[in-house]
Length: 196
Image 1: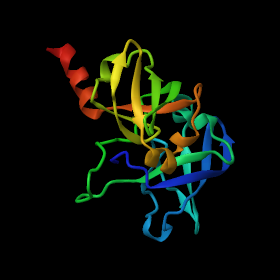
Image 2 (image 1 turned 60 degrees about the vertical axis):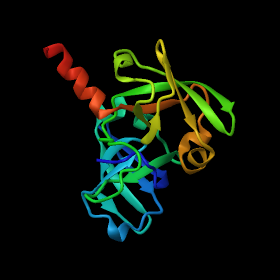
Image 3 (image 1 turned 180 degrees about the vertical axis):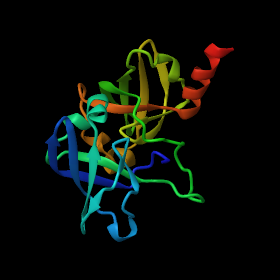
């Protein structure tokens, strides 16, 4: 589990592809002496397992399924990604509960200034409109965000200057795609409702 609060910007050092899968080598500022082999790290919203590590990098193996259902299939050498280490019992929960299981890829439709922050308009992928609610939570590329409004098949979020600087949101442009994880509670409520 994660909180959606990014704690490092990583960089893809190398992508090795084989038989539809991939092995990612990710540069990080984390103290990897404190990261166990097999630990989970959210990489722009996708929960990946540390399979090898060095002084300033770790490796993660990614299945073809994950590559096809997330933006990870687009990553190449030099791609910057949001990183968050998994939550430990007793840690502060500053964002919302995030599983690191990406539901869909969503397009960035519009970005405009809104006071000091940036207003992002995000397209809702088919089948997910019922999971996005005004003032509810979503994770986009692993970042916990509050939904401002929902209109048809799009929703808006505000990115404050701190978030733009400390995550990949400061480099996104209309037409880019982000990993979307809907709120866990919304997912289970939607699953239970048809059974009533």
